[in-house]
Amino acid sequence: MPLPRNVSESALGGAFFRLKTLRLSCMLFAAFLLINLLPNRIKGDSFAIYAIAFAAVLEAVAAVYWKNTVVKDLASFTLALLIVWTLATSKFNLLREFLFAPPGKVLRQFILDYRDLVRHIFSSLRLIFNGYMLGLAAAVPLGLFIGYSARVGRTATLISKFLSSIPPIVYIPYGIALLPTFRSVSVMVIFLATFWPVLSGAVSGVMYTERKYLDVAKNLGCGKCRTLFRVVLPSALPHIFTGCNQGLSVSFILLTSAEMIGARSGMGYYVNYFSDLGDYTRTMTGVFLIGIVISVVYTAVGRLQKYILRWQA
Image (cartoon, rainbow, N blue to C red; front, side, top):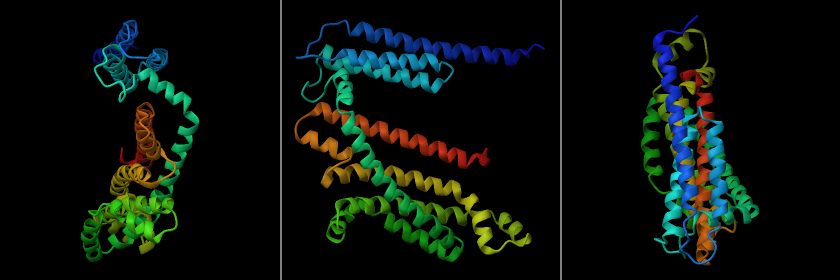
């Protein structure tokens, strides 16, 4: 049975758009290969073969997932970035070679230091996990019970707004004085960065629960505890996840800042240590590593949120 005319045209239009974006990534990949044929204007080897291999992998991924517009757009953006980066460093030497290494050199550093990088990643993620999960475990139940009373909820909202406006990093001197290790101080800072936004989100979510849902639960004979966890909690989850996302964003900022101050491991420590030594190739490697890890974590949390809140669709 033939498809309706409008459906066929829509499908053809979508396929044409996907092929067009795939062609863009192919053109950028070809342009990158041609650019690497130009002579270098920097001292030493630019290790362009690493950048070419990375670009080839990107283009292969874009070809495999040619139906996924996000993957193709991301591949095109990365290839364009590689082109600009290569031209500004190894080909025309527009940037200071001491501070800005060409892409091939940075990618090579990822391979050479991958053992240390993995160790620093796990060190940072372990700190984030400990502080973040402690913040969630304390803020969500407390926010549910506080928000269940409108009077207490309004007062708690004002108090949490005041306390959350204080940057948690200012508590580091007190943490160093009171806690035994700098690691425990970092966990405390991440805990505070997570606790207040999640608590505020939980209280707001409970207070904005529609009255009709509570009335239905009451008519069905549900007790307060059952109503709180079976009716109020699902209704408050969107607000709670908003607080979770805010807390996660601030936690990563504070984590890298704390690691740069006094830690002996972690992604922030890696960047600070090699910048002090003047090794800016490794410094750039650490900066890109932080961006990659945070993006992966945000994506994972976003997928988890989408799965848990799938009933909203």
